[in-house]
Amino acid sequence: MGNTNTVVAALDIGTTKICAIVARQTDYGRIEVMGVGKSASEGVTRGVISNIDKTVHAIQEAVEEAKRRSGIDITNVYVGIAGQHIKSQKHRGYLMRNHDEQEIDEQDIERLVTDMYKLRLAPGEQIIHVLPQEFTIDGQQNIKDPIGMSGVRLEADFHVITGQTAAIKNINRCVEKAGLQVAGLILEPLASASSVLNDEELEAGVALVDIGGGTTDIAIFQEGIIRHTSVIPLGGNIVTEDIKEGCMVMEEQAEKLKVKFGCALVSESQDNAVVSIPGIRGRSPKEISVRNLSHIIQARMEEILEHVYFEIRRSGFENKLIGGIVVTGGGARLKFLDFLTEFVSGMDARVGFPSEHLVNPNYRDLNDPMYATAVGLVIMAMENQEPVSAMAAVVDVAAAEEGEMEVLEKEEEMAMEIPKDDFQDIYKEKANTSKSQGSWWDNLVRKSKEWLEGDMNEYD
Image (cartoon, rainbow, N blue to C red; front, side, top):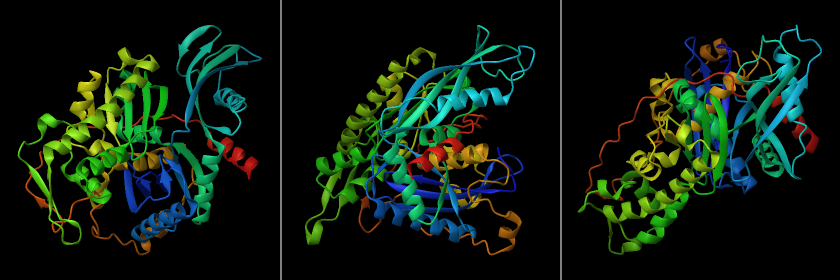
């Protein structure tokens, strides 16, 4: 990771929420969160900005809260990018070296990466990340790290991730209108992976499934290398819509029903459990069967997971994923979702939590799948930054500590709960115990920020 004397700021612009985190790295390599801000996202549809003004207002609200809680002025942020417009391609590049006796160094790798940014793309698209996979030196294949070796012909396979220029420009425009600068764009599935996967899973082979509000992002890793990425245009919001129509309740009530009483397996819900919802303007209360609610949720989640399993099969790595599937994101908060995932896919599954990297007792609420992307953005920002230079929100930590650092008590419940006045809880929830998580791998993305900024300047 980066320098422990710097602070980074990350901004997760999601379909349902916008989250800003200010954090620094401890001497032991873990994340110390200094401030968190959260606001409802009303200007984003399926991961893509659809209303500039609403998004700007939500960003400002989240950033101001993070500033207030950390006591640090945020000027630059690393921003996550996702959405149905994200695509991935595989390309191969090669480099002819003058001397076979001279060792291959980082400059040779950078030249190969630089060439990938010159690829011809469809109109309106641009490169977000160029991720090296495997190298070949003078015909010797399957080399993961060629630095220090000798050879004349250096070849490499690359996983190139692209996005729509218009969508990227809208993200930059919103961040700039909110009074900030974009220090770099990071693909959200990669960020989520950095916070919930460990080295063993990455080497053994694992599929990360990030179920957000508007989309479900998939990233497949094997032998420590990213092999496949894709986006499914279905997420947690469609489950809420189903509950709204199936139970004939308001959208806000449907979301609260899903979060507090939702269960992904009908067989695990109680037969006689009922939730009473107050009627509108004096009307009689409406009783909702928890079992019927589970029927609605399971049907839609099965559809999403079937799409996920199809993408895993399409990648060609179905039988190579010893680590199975790790589900994270806000949609992973449903009880027994890991069991449903195992039932649909036939693969081992667990729910991913970002707790391994966090040290703050004041921000335990961040140990939630819905914050996996935000925490991962901070981790990747620290890994990719250059020491105390062109980095997001680099500040003098000593000065910040001497100033007023107000650590507020928990002002609001970050996980949505149903007010006692609105719902009569006749249902006792079952505990959903999480499994252990591990640390993150180093060196995933190689210096793509400079090229991305160059592309942005070209379109300004």
